[in-house]
Image (cartoon, rainbow, N blue to C red):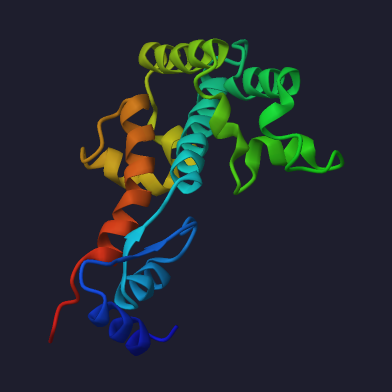
Length: 184
């Protein structure tokens, strides 16, 4: 439907709104176009847990530099997902499952975050980072999108704060796309 046709339809149906499903991984411009075309609800899901996973895996890499002997979150998740394939086995072919289980846009890993062993591994990771600290060069290496905001104090130098900021960045794209256009 074109922008004007959407508006005509909506004008004829007071109280009805359009909802856009699967808006994950869109640019702000594409999200803005959906809003301008009359979609009042933009559903997001895997993009948020994808951002969570990216941040946690980045912190896991950072922590592995500081404490190479530690058990990595990535290895814990990989073991749990291999032992419990029900959330991904119908989504990935076996040739690429090793990579896709951990890194795909469909983010099937999101179903494993509540597993007790995974939660322990996340807590252990965050605890290790509290003990070792988060040096600037490693934040720059592993979390470059957040680095300047940590240096300026906008984001606290804490693992949990970095994870939340990464997720909030995705939400910010939606907020910007949904904000009314400024008229010049």
